View: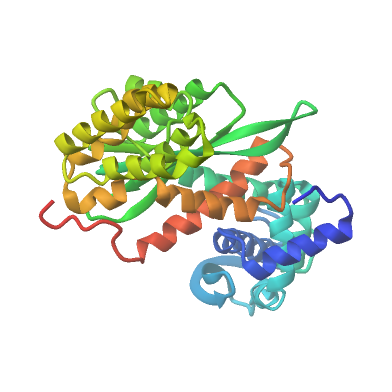
Length: 387
C-alpha cells in the first residue's frame, strides 16, 4: 500500500481497520474507559483523589467491578463509586454508544503515536468534558505502561522456542529506516503456544538478537530444548552466545527456498526441490544423512555451487530428528511464526511509515497481546503425552 497523506483517504483506511478489528484494542479501550470514569468522578467531586479542598462536593467510595460486552470483546472495568450521593459515570454509557468512533480514534493514536491531541480527543469523547494536560499525560502513560508491562512480564520454562524477524519502516532523525521486529514464541510443557516477547530496533542485527535473547533470559526463560528459526543474520551467533547448550533447528521450508538461488537452470528447480524434500522426509537421522550424501554427489558435476551449499547447509535442518517423531511436523518449520508475522503485517500496513520505533512497538505489541490471549483458550498446539 502506498503512503497516503490526504486526511480523507487516511480516514477511509482507519475505517478499514475498524471493520477488520484492531488487535489489543480491548485492553486499550478498558484502560481509557477506566481513566475517563475516574476523571469524571473527580469533576463531580470537584477534587482530585485525596485532595483536601473546601470545594469538595463529596467523597470517593472505591470501585465496583463490571464486565461489559463490546465489539472488541469483553471489557472488565472498575466503576468509580461516590459516598452519600447519586453518581454514575456517563463515560460508561457513552463509551459503549460511541464505540465505533472511539475505536477509530484509538487506531489512529496507535498508527501515529500517542500525541497529546489524539489522547485528549479520545478521553474527552468518553467523559464528555475537557481534560487537563496532566490527565492526558496520565492516560498516555497508562497505555504505554500496560504494553511495557506485558513485554517485560516474567516468563518461565518452555520446551520449544520459535524465533523470527520481519521489518517495518520507521522515521529516525529525518530518515526512513528499516526497523527489525524480533518475535519469540514458546511452546509450554503442556503443548500450549504463547508469545514470549517482541523487540523493535534499528540496529546491527547480531547485537539486536543478542540483546533480545538476553532479555528473554533475564525474564526467566529456561528449560528450552530447541530453538526453531530461519537463518537470520546474527541469530545463530547470538543464540550460541546467550544459550550455548540449546540446539537449533533451521526451518526446512526456508532451506528449500534458499536452495533455489543456487540452481543454475530453471528446468532443474522442480527436481532439486523434490530431492531436498526427500531428504527431510527421511524416517530417521541416519537415513537423512545418507540421502544428503547421495544428492550432493548427484549435483557435484552439473551444479557444483548447489552441491557445495547442500553439503554445508542441509544438515542444519536435521536437528528435528533428535526429538519425538510426533513433534516433527510442528518443529520442521517456522510456519507458526510466519502466520503471526502475516497478521502483524496485515495490521501495520496501514501505517506505511511509523513515526518512530515506539509507535511501531506499540501497535505490534497490541497485536501480539491479542494473539497470545487467544491461544490461551485454543486447543493444544503440540501433544506432550508420552513425549
